Length: 395
Image (cartoon, rainbow, N blue to C red; front, side):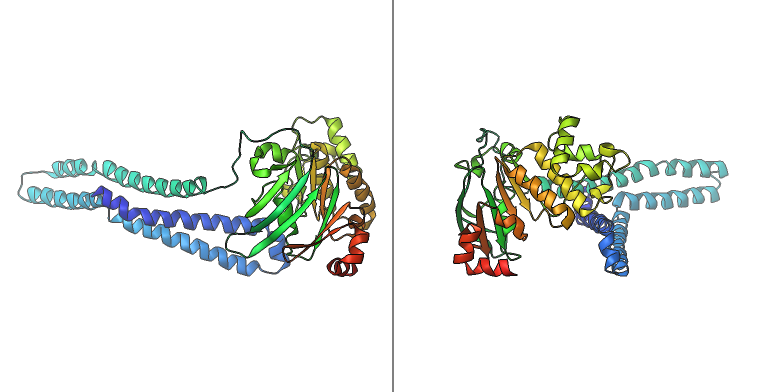
């Protein structure tokens, strides 16, 4: 009986949990992207979506209440109350009970409500708990091919990177990269250019194992990245993306995120190298100024300079700049270019960019088109031999 009740309740509580999760997720996204929502005049649409999610959660909760109301012990409890009251009234009418006896008898019957309602509440909590645990376990047990490889290779990194016939495709999609092969010596600067969607960012993310190649090998210092200790590999690689994530902490804490034990002197040196000190010193509390969530109180250029400072502080052997200077104004660009040039010395640097000033001084330029590497060489060589490169350069 109780097992059947739990069986009937399980899909209902799963729907309650799922609808509540969808409600919170959508609400969180709407609040995080409130500027985009308002900028696109989509407030009414988001309100309608929120109402729809609330309606779904309400309906699921009402359905749960209906199923719980069919809990057999609850039905038996109310039948017992009705039968007991009827018997007490019949005895009172026959003169075998007085008013006090009727009240006392009915009061004793009412004492059964605690165990009845407690059991109903307990089974409801158990079912909700099982539904929540199922959702959590689905995430915990989800397959992850990116093994930490705790006992993997972890020697000091030199920065040599080699791609051997590397192909990659996202699940259910066409190939993003096909048969890509190239080799970069330690300390070289590589510019990756190509049209939007040509696989430039995907190529960079294979180096630190954000993704694993579908086929072929990605080698760092001659060792397949899958054979590296993942923590050791990523500690030596810094990626600065266009969309910078900053924490709601002080500027000093954000710069020192990758190196928690950094001294104030090291933090200042990194900020100075990234051309960030100038604007930091104008803030109310300098390096101790707490920035808003995701750095909303800073401009795009300021966020990117803090990200550069964070990378400089960790002193990686491989530095990847994914269009990281796109939000920097022309007045600051020259300073940032010098900072990047200085940072590139002695470490392997990959630059994904459309800025010709950064492309020119790269030791090697890789031209990506449709997920394939169509040309590789220096700027002068590619201007003579690659039509795809000339087209990009002339745009």
